[in-house]
Length: 205
Length: 299
Image (cartoon, rainbow over the protein chains, first blue to last red):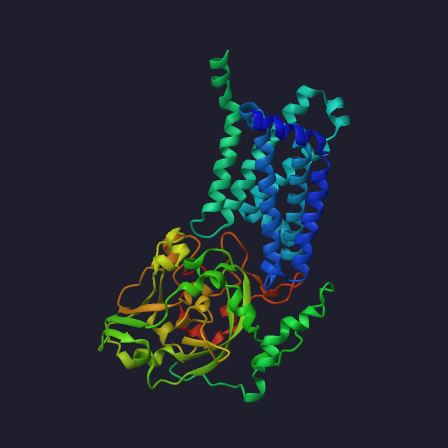
């Protein structure tokens, strides 16, 4: 707890908006490397960039889902950053989609065809669509207008969006690959904590 | 059907080494512009522009060394490729464990500039050096009842991180019908750009079947078996619905998870446009092999 307290102290002084700057710089840096075919982008930059944006979106979704359990179980309070984490995740999902649509598939009709015909694309698209109302309402005005209860209810869409994102990844890989399985299991476990914690609460009470 | 593939290239068509090695430097001059063209490449047979050695050897699928495209180039140096022997067994007159040099001795290595199409919808053009596979089969003597050729890739668990992770059921196995294996387009490659195969490309020798998706062109071969039964193939075992035995390049039959109608040529950069995929990857001369077969069923 002492460690958590001191981290909390540092975090209090760090503005949440920092994450937006870090995200934008990171996205821009990856794009620049892809454009100039540096490092992992040496030979075939399009799919690598698509993958990079998608993966960072998943990582941010995991991070966003970790905030509440961390606070409950370790006392580490990152609540202040949760909105920025979520909105950044949305930003990377959109970037991932744009690389897919514009650079990879390259035509509106083909994008539509992919969404309709390929279940793993359908699932990814569903995740993106779920995140839109969340991104739009991620501001204090929307929170006030909607009221805390219904706002919180709407934002539970985070859970299916994250699960579908992980499923999308698992579904697209060839062969038995461990990374997408880990993402899916971690996300399922984090969502499960929302529904299993009452056991714990009862014990404490 | 038994004709020899004739090489229409002349020395003038060969991309000079300085050009295929230097393309990165030419590209470096265009950094930030995205203006990436075919600078520095000589034109070649049938309008095919070979990819650079760097592109060919740094963007690979060789799941024994990991699933990322860069993984094989990073991890494959650990594979031991010398000495190398290939077990030839099954319905052959001269079975045995052949040292690679003995198996290939006396056979002529030819230059073959082929399109290479991955099932993941990307493609390259590769200037292979290799031996017509039919020559090898004739050397070992195929018995009359044989109908299929089965292949197996080396397994070196301590040197292959993908084998440790069990990405697929290793050893990797592949197979061809005998007439496919005997087709003059089918080669056993021993080099690219007149250099010995890099490990990530399937050293010391690999199959090349240019009208089929890349995974049929099995790498680092240690066993060749002649059989009268259709042999199992690794991707078919992993997912039969998505990977059939034939796996011919066919723009009209989609892979369930992605379209095969178009492909992206490797090397075009971030704004490369897609191009239409050709039936049999642009090798219509193999069509008679499949006369009477419904290629939307026999995938």
